Amino acid sequence: MEENGRKIHIIAILVGSLLLFMAFSLPFSSHAADSPDSIYGNIDYDAELDALFRDAMKKRDAGDLEAAIEGFHSILSNQPQLHRARLELAVAYYHAYKFEAAVAEAKKVLDDPKTPPNVRVTILAFLAQVKQDKENLGVPKSYWKFPVMFGYIYNDNVNFGPDSHIFGGRIFDPGMEEESDSGLVASAGVDLTYQTGKHFMFNGKDTAFLWQSGANVYHRGYFDETDYNLAVITLRTGPTLISRGSWRANLTLQDDILYYGKEYLANYVYLLPSLTFNVTDALEVTVDGIFNDRNYHQSRYQGEDSFYLAGRLSAGYTTKGGRLAFQVGVQFFDENADDDHFSNDGQNFFVGGNLKLTEQSNLFALFSREDSKYDDPPPDFTDSRDDDDSRYTAGINYTFKNMGMLTDWMAELKVIYNDYDSNLGAYEYERTQVLMTFSKTF
Image (cartoon, rainbow, N blue to C red; front, side):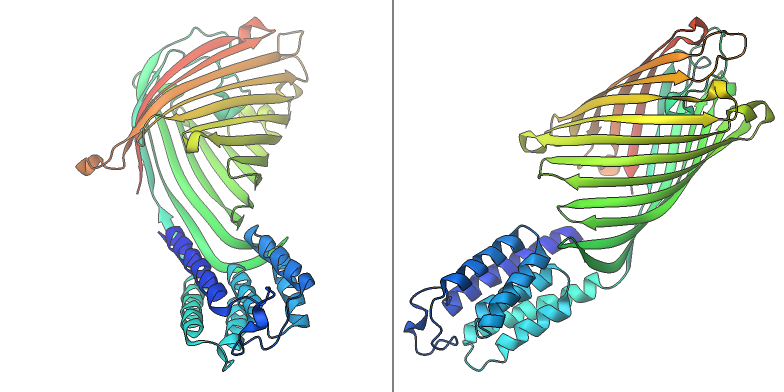
């Protein structure tokens, strides 16, 4: 709602600018001096000022507000009575959230006794809008969300091989026979976005400062193979910078507390930097990283204590009016463990897509391949591990609308298949998981 309101405000300002343009009969015309009552007096057409004005307008429309403001000031330093340029300067200050400066420039035109009555009305509306936005945007606000999820899982290989998206390259029970089981999954959390009300200019563009925090509890419990249940408690917090339509960045400190089976397994502490650039309206590029300290609680796992470092480059592209989206990326990682046969490095490549079938349903697919090489051979082996993990994900979801208590709940069916190859046969495995879940954010 706030974003829609903001768009309405901007549209109102643009319309106001157009009215001001019409009301003032711009001096950037050879006929500007034809009207004896013009508030511009006898200012003649000036090709150089005309070019400066058009250039400043282009820069403002492109979001380069600092350059636009500088351009309007250059015009006014030569011709202080060019009130159209002064009003466009006020609009540029408004877009840059420099409300006091916007008000000051607009009032200079309003205080001129030669300003026509219809223009005064438009300026007064502009000043009222600036005052309202200053009050709304300058006051810190908190936005809360409460995501929940529950569902059913079938796993044809519960006990053998790692869950690579939780535990990295960890093998729990090499050499065991595969066991299948079904179970329930559930999660609940709270997300807080704190709008600080602070804005500043960076590289000519307005940048908003926010703080985002959250907590989440996830549980996957099997009906029979309860020794392989998983619970994760996640806590996170960190700053976010947003330059609308240009870029966004965040730095997150996260703590994962892991329980596996009936015991407290490990504590993972993360530092997660991320930077996303909006190249075009349809294309964005993200650079992010992972700094992860993995500390296992049980003494038998102490050799696996490690520091995991990763960097990723990815790109997202939308087309067909937003109905079709693609994502592709590559990640390089290095894990240094206390015992060298757990230390490994490698890369992960992924590509995926999302197709909006209707306004309420989506079809999605993702493929990833992770290649990892280990430093030393594991116990009882003479060769170091050289593993490849291919992961295939496909699914469909549907969001209910106008269905009473089901409204805004999303139902999703997802299938995940892992094909884990290794030069050491004891570490090879396959796994298929089927998940049917319901989720909603309150």
